[in-house]
Structures are given as C-alpha cells and as structure tokens.
Image 1: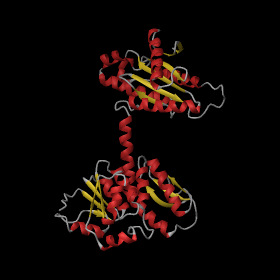
Image 2: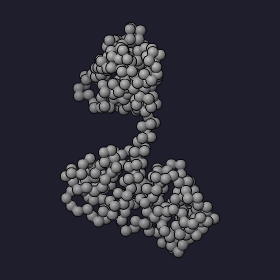
Image 3: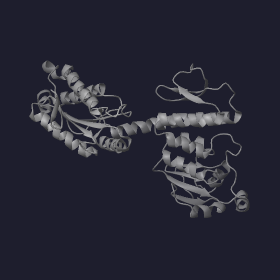
Image 4: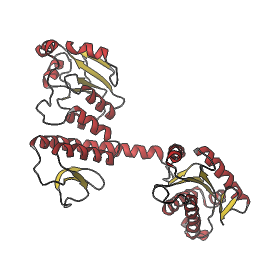
Length: 402
C-alpha cells in the first residue's frame, strides 16, 4: 500500500488520481490535472515527492519544469503497462523512479493504438513544453518577461511589449508582478483569437508564482555574488566575471583594465574610531567608487580593505588608436578627487579630506591575460604607490595620480 503523509503531489488526471486513492491508506493525494495548475503549488510549498503521470504528451518537458522548481524533490513517473518499456529504455534524466498504477481499459487499448490524449488535446490552456519554457526563464524577471512576450506574441500573431504604464497606447493582455509592475500590451488592433485567450487566462494564473520564483532566484543570486558588508561584488564572483570578460576580450579585441586599491592606514581608523566606523568607511568607499565608475564596470571587495575594479569597453573602440587605458586612468583619478572631498561623518574631527587610497593599474593584454596575472601586476603597482608616499595610483612603475 502507498503511504501518503500529505507531502506528495500528484500530477495526473482525475481518473488516475482516483485509481491511486483506492490503494492509499490515507485517501486521495493532492493532485493537479493540468501542468499550469501545479506551478502555484510547486512554487509555494515544498513536497517530498512529485508523481507525474506519463499520460501527458510532453511528459519530459513537465518533468523538467518540476525539477527546476523543486531541485531536491523526488520525481516519480506513473505509467500504465504500455509505457513501462519506454521508461526502462529511455535515459533517466530528471526522474528518480517510476511505478505502474493499476491498468485501465485505456491503458490496455494503448498497447495497440498508441499514447492516450492529453489534458490539452483541444488546444486550450498551456502545454507542458510551454510551462517548462516559462519555468526555465524564471531565473530573473527580465528573462521571464522576454519569454512571456515571445510566447504571447506567437499565440496572438501580433507584436507585444511590456510597459510600466497601462496607458502606453496598446491593448493590455496581462500583468507581471515586478518592481514596478509591468503590463503586457499588444501593438495590434485585431481581436485576440479565442484559442490564445484560453492560453492567456492560463498564463495569468502562472504569472504570480513564476514572478515570485524569479524574485527569489534573483535574491539568492545577489546573496551568492555580493559582499554582505559593502554591497560590492565578492572575490569569487570577481574572479569568475573577470576571466569570462578576458576570454571575450581577445577574440573581440577590446581592452580591459584592472584597478587594485586599498585604504591607506585603514588599521589606524579601526583602532582609533572602532570597527563600526571602519565598516562605515568601507561601505561609503564602495558607494563613492560606484558613483565614479560607469554602470557596466565591476567593483568588488577582495580582502579586508582591499578592492578591485574592472574597467572594460562595453563597445568596440571607434578608432584603431583609441586609448582605453586613459579612460580607466581618468576614472581612477576622479575617484581620488571625490574621496578627498567626501565627509566621512564617522571620523568626527577628521571627517573630510583625510582618507586616501593607494592603487595599481594593470591592463589586458600587456600586463596579463588572466585575472590572476592582472591582479599580480596591479598589486606590484600598488606596492610602488605605497613606497612612494601613498595617496596615489600607479601603472606598473609609473605614477599617474598623487
């Protein structure tokens, strides 16, 4: 007998749910007949196991969607005798196991006539593949919005776009819970086909749980790549991003410059004003660097009071002789100027004009072809800045600001 503790979700038709209920000591499993109905449950509650009936025509897509939403949940396929051979012969994929439920007349007939119909055989609602594509895109709100727009545009045969305002001149189709909320608008004047309207209705049911999933994923991603104290990127992400960028920089022929800097005499500030003041200095320093650099440049904390900034070209140079390093130099010099004018209130009488940094610049490909090589050369330049009086940024033996 199958034991149900209330933590097992069944994705199957009412008929199959009834068959399973007859062999369960604790009655009927909670179940969903349509894939998109299951998303709300899977996005809001953790299940010990999810049982998926092989009756769905896109069984593999539905299993994939379940795995994306609940990575640690056991996924078990339910099949009639007709489907057992296929399950045994197919790769395991996201499945953990399968079992055979009591055969029905339809199961026996399917041995000769092929697979049974689906819950979406009349074209209404979403297919398992469409649900799986939406779940795959729910890693962040922008990707989810792109997938929704792509799907809806295909369904209605019209161009669509998301807007932050409903009065954008288009026909509202659905609302995406983002910050701020986004409205999907149709650019066409024609009526929405009835088949597409059924899909839109089903999609609106999914939008809430999918957008919540996207926000959770974004939040977890930010935690994984961000330094908790300063809000800068952390060391691990910096290495990962820098090496990816350097791999692109060679074939695409754009420049990358790395700035390594630390706060001069930081220990003195910690010892004199306390660690809370020291933490505030670190946070404000990062905020100032972010204000000084361009939006696509990367600011990371890689040690106690040591930071790295990656300057890279978001577009190719306009001229062959374009000097990318000059941009990094200018921004580094500007940061020193801003730092000298900023008032660090936690320093009391020394609030303004006393905090300085020393830094070193290294540029791809001349000073290194990997992140570690650039950091090593930038560190050499930083030490040169320290030995020549601090409050300066050097580029391999050459002082560029003081």
